[in-house]
Structures are given as structure tokens and as C-alpha cells.
Length: 293
Image (cartoon, rainbow, N blue to C red; front, top):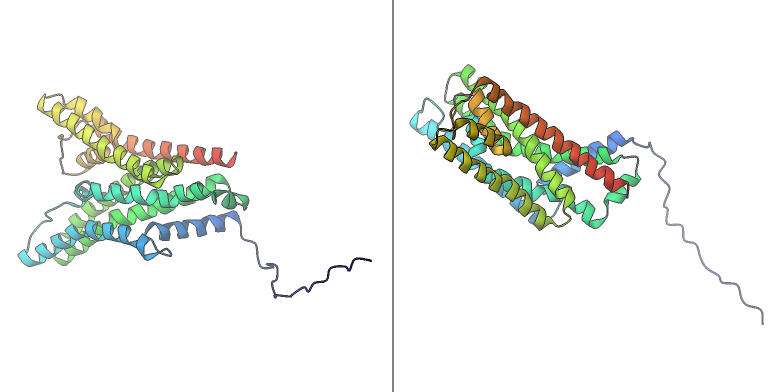
């Protein structure tokens, strides 16, 4: 008995191939940057993902709001907390923010294997890493600069000297930018190496806060022993101590150590830039190796 050929029905669901313009890798990288920046604050994700970044942002902004309120209420003629000291005063919150959000941008794609889908498009590994790095950098800058802007607006409304406040705020913005570059490099590199979010968070916090604690202790001992040069050199080994050294060199603020020589003051800025460049280069190298697997 001859077999009856199988019969079937082809349903036309109306799907059509994409015939629009094909975007270049630059447009893909830009879209990746925007989505990464949104993800850093939980936007476009679940409500649970928004809690931590916005909670940290609000707590970080709270001292600035209190200071502005106190200036208005008591007619203060200067800021109780200088612009350039704000990041050092809230470094724990800043470290937690960077440590918690870096894995969102770096570890997740590696853990779920979706990195292969990104690199299958006309997007190089360097462009992908740079877009993610820029997203974390932008989010960190928002975290750092919103309180500075709030303090500046409050100082201007309180009719403090406009030129002096503008100069001090501008210096704080530059210092915040250098700090953000270093923190982004540390958080991004660690998160790109670790596929486990918890491990990446703990490792980043240890590097940033524990390292800063050790450096601060060494600087305190060096100051008490009169070995200021030892304390200055120790300050080169932590992002936050580099920030303190650069702040002391460029402003009237002093932290653990007094202002050092001109050469040492310049060294802090040079090392901050070099650390940011080296960490970014290592991040690019990491993703180049991932793409080559």
C-alpha cells in the first residue's frame, strides 16, 4: 500500500524580514551605553533593582540637603563641609554603589553567556567594554556630582561669594571626575573577572575600603613619627588616599597629612590619571581575551 505523503498547512503569520537601515557599531555602542546607564540605577528593570541605587543616592544627597537647610536657617557665611571633602566623607556609600552596580553591567552578560550575542554583531570587544565602562562612569559621576551641585546651589542662594564658590565647586568637579575614573576602573575590572555578583561586590569593597583603611593607618603612624614622606608615598596606593592628596595639594583642605612639596602634589594627579588608564587598558584586554575564546 503506497504511503500517503504528509500534508500540512503553512500559516502566513505576517512576519517580514527587517529591511530598514542597518546601524553601525557606533550606534550599537551608544545604545549599549544608554541601556547600561539606565540599568545602573535599576531603570527598565524590576522595582527591586531600583531600591539599592536610589536608596544610596538619597542617603548620599542627604548631608548636602541638611547643610543647605542649615545655611538658610542660621545664615552661615561658609559651607560647613567643603565641596572637595564631600566624596571623602561619603566614601562608604560611594564604594557600595560602585561595587553593587559594576556586576550589573559586566558580570551578568558573562554569567548568562549573552556577551556572545553582543560580539556576534558588528561590535568589537573593545567597543563593548568601553560602552559598559562609560555607563558605570556616568552613573558614578551622577552619584558624586549631585551633592556638589546641591551644595553649590545652596551656597549661591545663601549669597556667598559667587566667584569663590564657583572656583571651589569647579575644583571639586575635576577631583570627582578623577576619582570616578579610578573607581570605575576598579569596579569594572573586578566585575569582568568574577562571574559571581556577590564575590565581585565583596572584592571591590575590600579593595576600595580596606585598602584605604590600611593606607590611612600608615599615614597616621607616619605623621605621629614625623615621617611625612612615608605617609605621602603610602597615599599613592589607594584611590581615596590619592583623592585626599590631590585635594590637599589643590585646595585649602587638609586631611591626615599636611600639604607636601610641589613635586609630590603633582605626583598625586599623575598617578590618578595613570591608574585610570591602566585599569581601562586591562579591562579592554580582558574583553579581548573573552572575544578570542
